[in-house]
Length: 514
Image 1 (cartoon, rainbow, N blue to C red):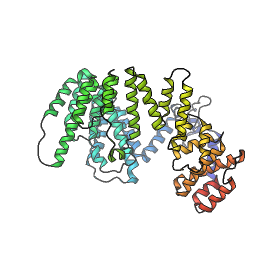
Image 2: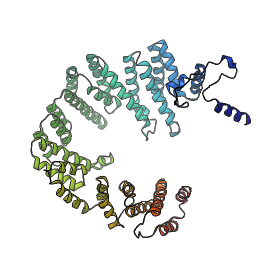
Image 3: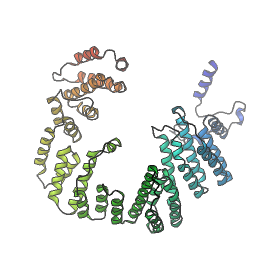
């Protein structure tokens, strides 16, 4: 122990000198490279690492290769690159063959190391093989992506870490493929078709569609003709449900590819035709309208938006995370754009006001006010605030007032209805309390208490840190402000928390350790 302390003291006394290896003499040590004034000496960078002796760097690299298998692969590939692309390709091929032959399940304890190993494989392809042979790198990326299904069958990727590696590989493959000469890139895309049709929902489908969006529109004619021919071929009738499902997926992929090609060529009418063929009962009207507006065809865009009310979201849509309110807003925005382009200003203004009044949409209100003649905006704003104050959901009204901002009105809303605030609406209440704390302590106090009461009342231990911070903020508010007769007073409120939640030791430990 004493020896280690002495060694540490020597190191601190001379921070700029790495010193010679123990077995070397002091006279053989090279003079240290001086860093620029003010440089941070312990942060790895090109500058600071250049100051280290070469042998010291080699030692650090060797130590890390022994500890870190993924890093060892990167170093081995960098060394192989000195021998040429074939040597690097052999390293990649061995790893890909091992992945393709593996069958064991990757549990959560091994998942991180597995993801790092996959990422190292992609890094070797991109950083070492691609500069030497781009086509060979692209071939390995395709092989890597082709094995995605078997990998995901062996690993629980709830956090999406492994998926992120495959997304990176797909993006890189699109970039490399698009950088090929125009004709070569189109032939490469055509060569992917059989593999895509064999697995329509696989990673290569995403790759091919991404590639089509980057190719020269003039080079897409042969690919379009090939896809059209495949789409026209009748499917094989076997009576097996899974085969019929596969045939439907293939047909849908082919239609989407033709749609991608039409979009790349700027052919809006073909894009719409393929959308109707792919989704005859429920074409994406918002997508169609967006493209028609982009093509300066607002009347047709408006017609699509108003043909019929968008179908309600299914339970599956909601599970997938589709937001019906957001879709309604997007539809309204597109309709307003079309009306503006057609010079139908009054209708556009009416839609803006209705959009604001229905959802307390601040951007809609700002746009509405900006379109009014001079001197009419003040009266309109008074009407708007009346709508906000009468809105059925006071939490949403509070959020609007805080974001607008009108903190005086927000404070009056809070203090005028002190018992209604629900702590579970913390995404609104927490920022509102923070915004009101400086100028409106009584209102902030009401909101902080609602947040604390909800967290402790439901025993949300993961949020105890927030509750302790809110209680600390209440103490600061009580010290510097007259809370205007807040009930109960701060001391009584804290005592009440003790009585009701005294056994929530995790929370009180945070409060007392504060």
